[in-house]
Length: 121
Image (tube, rainbow, N blue to C red):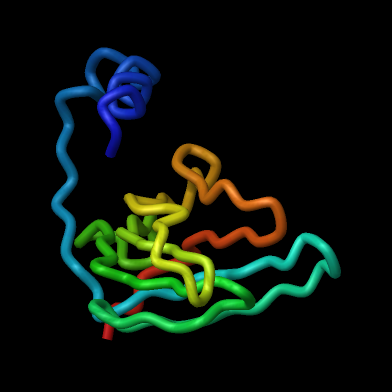
């Protein structure tokens, strides 16, 4: 997480909640949703950790997806690398959070990608 985002997230929490830690584990993959903003088409895709695939005009790679041990259907955090198809420049690289996709989002004029959940088995 970028230092500025970490600071904002820490300041937004109540004083007692800042010290609380949550045990997380990695899933085998993640379910992502893609949106083509031009025609409104959406698609849900499953990616295995360490893998990648095309989603509309983007190449999406998943390094890891983590979730709370005590709540597998809870908040998912996925580390993604996203490029335009056929181009080496990275459009997005970092952690996306399922419950707060706008906190660290892909900035693309046509497409949007966000995390829905981790694959736990």
